[in-house]
Image (tube, rainbow, N blue to C red):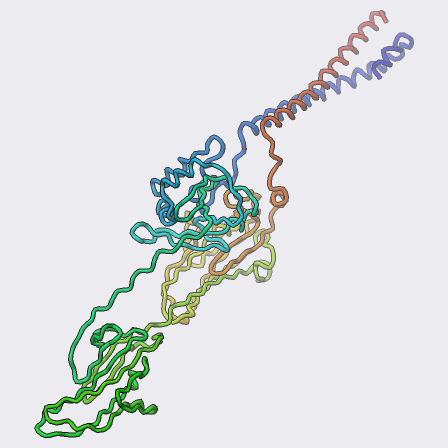
Length: 524
């Protein structure tokens, strides 16, 4: 268009008006190109900051991490970020690795092997309980419990074929192990073997003589009244009659063993006859000369189970005024504590909270139940890790409990839960008015994953209605991976194109100005 106007200007001076109009349009275009150049330059500055100053995760650490914040990224990555806390036994790291049988030399060996492994069936160990986790009580060198560790398959919150960057080593006891770069957590192929059970103490034997006596044959023929009879022990009772008179007499040997048979069974009647109705063991009349002693014996065997709810666990037996009492090691049925948890969404009509996604400002009440189904009392502590719950909510009613910010645990005082008793604790949270779009955790993908996950005996998982960016995050977990080279090439191409159009516009403007000057002088 510009060439056409210039070529016909000498033949048609009326085209000067069109040339002026074209000059104004070029001036506007030049202004537009200049603004485009400025904005592209600013964009390049921002792009450079992104390339040379990579963004940091907004949720890089988790309370379950052994090394909060991990071992560092890029030039900040250092194995000393793990060795330092280990040597100082921070968070009982040295006790944990000693419990697994991993020595310091084996840990140092792993520091020379920074690589990655595939998730598959690997087990990750951390400090917080999660669904499907196995709890292990960690003890120090003296056998005192110092911490609780939770082992959970990595594939529970990672793709099974995902690659995890770690320091990888080998232990003589547990075999392959790794220390994850992102959080410092231990990863193994197996669960550790529990420590051996303590050796039960051996009873101290004792011996006395009486008109009626009993010995515990199983425990070394010791005086049964001085030791506790245990399951399947064999007890031999002796009935002795001594005639201290001057003439002979006839006596009957009758022994009511009903109380004895409450925890045992007769295996040798010693020649007597047991009345199964009255539980009296009797022998025929015996003549006892003066100064003579006659003895009758019988043997019972303790039952294979001595569990009972009785409070008086003894065998009481009398013969001619002589009474003996044999203590019995009966036991109460063990405590059987059943823990369970439920949740109701009060804002949506008291429905089961897990049946429908929670919305902004919904009030959800959690009910924690502990019931003793056994026969013995047990100390029970209500503790609920609600850190994941409070990512999308706030605690508005602690139900009398105390919330610990550092461990993200809501706890109530310990109670002695007797057999058959049930205790309930409740607390209420309210979903935040504005649900955060915080990205999922780097070391713990279950953090900020649009779900409230809570475990107390049973699992409670509640979906949360998250904002749009979280939906995009779940569909597209990360941007295309490009390095500094690709970014700078793209920026250079964009800069070249914008610069070309800017200078082209400026050249056309100069040519129009020269033509108008020549036209005014009459040279064309």
